[in-house]
Every structure is written in structure tokens, then in C-alpha cells.
Length: 130
Image (tube, rainbow, N blue to C red; front, side):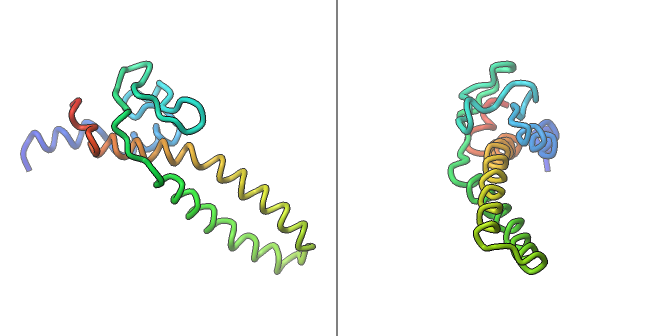
């Protein structure tokens, strides 16, 4: 490993970038908003002018959302049904609302985290501005 490689790895810590991305903030400065609207990533950060248009999040955040929500809600539905034996319509209604709410909460945060991970690892053109 060369000194340049070590320097490039240390200047963009992944954990800090992921925390900033989870908060939907710029992975570089942490104060500028990363998203415009609900899911559209800004071309540049309005605070530090870091270019964010290089991202390739595509379907990754949606797949991660489905994975997390499915793994949380599936066992919870089974537990609620076995323990309380509610009316099926009540169970479906409550867990449908819960599933949609959790999905809407997670989707922009996971998109921010995916974009931040790409920024921190210098993927898809993020490394050119270093």
C-alpha cells in the first residue's frame, strides 16, 4: 500500500459518511441536504458544492427497504397472530399501515446511505474530485 492509497482511504471515513447519509445530509460536509424532495438526489451540495450527481443508487435502496421491512414485519405478524388471535381484517389493516409507514420512513434514509457509501468508497466517479 502506498502513502497515497492510505491518504485517500483515511480522508473519507465510511462510518461518518453513512451516518450523514442516513440523515439525508451531504456525505462530505454533513450540513447540506442531499435530497431534493422525497428521493431525488441533488446534483451538488448547496453548502460545500460537492458533486453528488455521480451516484448510481438505482434500485438498491428499494431492495434494502423490502429486505428490512420484510424481515421485521414477517415475524411480528406471526407473533401477533399466534399470541392475540385478532380478526384477520384487523391484523391486515394494522400491519398494512405499519408496513407502508416503515417503508416510507426507511426509503429516503437508505438512499442517502447508499449514495454516501458510494461517495466514501469513491465509486462511479466520486473519486475524480479528490
